[in-house]
Structure formats: C-alpha cells, structure tokens
Image 1 (cartoon, rainbow, N blue to C red):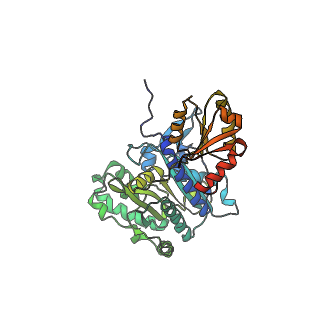
Image 2 (cartoon, one colour):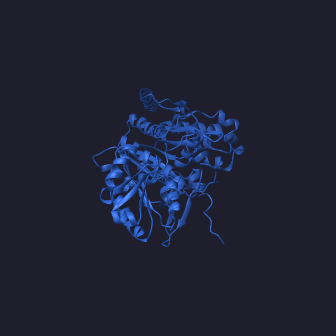
Image 3 (cartoon, one colour):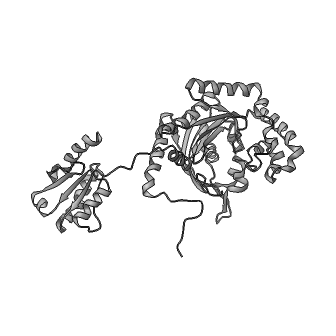
Length: 427
C-alpha cells in the first residue's frame, strides 16, 4: 500500500520552494532593518507551557493541540504558536537581565494545530513572528505594527487593511468582564457549550465564537472601549497618534479580541485579499502579564504572528509573482569518455569560484544535454570534447544570442564572470 502524506500537511516541491525562500529572506531582511534578532525554540514543549501561556479557555488548548507522552511519561505538545515558547526561553535564559533592552526577537518555523484543513489553514503551518519584550513604550507597539506592514509591502501586497483595538489594562478588563457576564448570563443557554463554559472563566472569548457570531446579543454586547480607564485610553491614544504620524492607516474595531488569553492593551490584525473573501493575514498584540505568568519578572511585551500559507494565497489573489529561482550560469556539455571525465573537475572549479553550474548525469546525447541546459535556463553552455581537450580550450555558447567563442580552460572562469557581469551586474 502506498504511504501518503498525513491529512492537513503538504509538501513544498522544488518548483514552489523558491517562493518560500524569497518570503523567508524578506522576513529576515525586514527584521534586520528594525534590529530584531532571530531566536529558535523547540518544536515540542511541555504541555503546561501552552495551558498556562495561551490560556485553558482557548480553542487552541481545548481542541487543537497535538499532545503526547514521551517514554519518560512527560506531557509534551507540538507547539501551536510561537509566543509562549519565546517567553519561556526569555525567562529560562534570563534575557531580561541583559543590558540590551528591550529584547527584539523573531522566529520562522512550523506550528501544529488539529483543525479542519482548508485553504490557508493546515494542521502543520509555518509562522513568521516578531516579539519585543521589556518595553511599555507605545512607540514599540507602533514599531511592531510597522514591521509587519513593511514585510507585506516589500513582497508586493497592496490590499492591506490594519484593524486596531485596545483590551485595556487588568482593571479595565475586569470591569468589562463583569459587564459581559451580566449581558450574556440571562440568555447563556442559547449559546454553544463552549460559550457556556467560558461565561465565568473568560467571557471575552464569547465575542470570538465562530458558532454564535450571529446571535443578537453579540451585536449589543458591551464594548471594551466604554470600559477603558484613563490610563488605558491615554496609552491607546498614543499608539494611534504615532501610527498617524507614520502615515500608517488603520480602522478601529471594538470587537477585535483575538483568540488567545494573554492579550491586553493594543491588539491588531492585518486583513488582506483571499479567494472570494477578505481574510486575516496576521494578528498580534500586547501581553504585559505573560512573562510573570510563566515565572519571570513583571515584563511588558508585544508581538505578532503571521501565516506564510495565507500570505501565499494573498499574493496569488493579487497576482503578485515572486521572482523565479536563480538560473544556471553555465552548463557543461561533454562529448566522449575523456570529456566526461574532465567535466566534473571543470565543474567543481566553476562552482568554487561562485558560479551556478551543472552538467549531465544521465548519459544523454549531445542534443539531450543541450535540452537539459535549456530546461535549467543556463545562460552559457560550455562544450568540451576530444578536440577541446587537446587544445585545452572549451567552446562557450551564449544561449541568449547563439554566439560562441573558444576559451582556454585557464581563462574560463574569468571569461564567464566578465560576460555574466554584463547580464546580471556584479557577479
């Protein structure tokens, strides 16, 4: 029986891999512009990390995590998101004690959630995220948002809509929590089982329910904006003012609560085009209590995470074509046994000098070798046979215009680099 890929996962084939590399390269370049450093954490962590860090009332913890026991009986989980792991590492390695603060970090890697697979929502998916830990300055909220917007814009997306909200500080959230309980409690029996369970634990999560989003009480639920205290209002006003000065447009949405329990103050999403709809490309927000929740000192933090799979869909909808994979600089065509023995040596010399080069490995005839050079989009073909070996020269053919020259083996690398410079710029 043929073994097939697990449901909700996918293979990135060579024809698609360069788009992923381009996206990841752009992410790293943008993070460097903003002075964010890469950090890598394990793909699996203690289950308790996500129960405490993400929140035991969330869909992620209740329904979507891949949990397992190792041979030592330890409860482990494939990471469903990146922030909890980053905060765990921040606390464990005492990064809060370093002189360089805030710690501005980013990650790119696979996450795992047991969901119903659909376009842009897989069971294994790849996230790019950035986190800034240690600063309560509203300007770093704006910086994190600007980083995400810059990333999308550098990749060519134009249909972007930034949505903002504030969940306020603990005092504001507590007042809003009481108002939500009073609002929903008389009719909570009309809601799904999840909402009924969340009423007392975390009623804010009811507003994020997909099953009951059309219930009339959703539209009349108390808005967090009405319960923000003066400090929270001032903080949010500063974030908005900085974004205004940056020229970053946004919309306010008091119903934006995000799907994780650790958010407070600024929350945001960036919406983009999808097939037949507008979809959330990324989300993030401030999480000032998460570090202390995971055993560290009271430390403010803010971050975002985005799905590369959803980004690829948005690029497709907007018709953005990422540049193709690099073509070969040259392809060696060998004629005869002696030439076939010489070709690997010559090929290695070209590669050591930084040229993208290849040769035939399938014992093709000359015509077949030239066809392979075409398939690899080689700019030049280097032909060697008995006569060329005798003369210590190769025939170099320019595949763009068909011209060819005899070039001494000793000068071949310099010749190709000079010619390629006129085509590609500095080689």
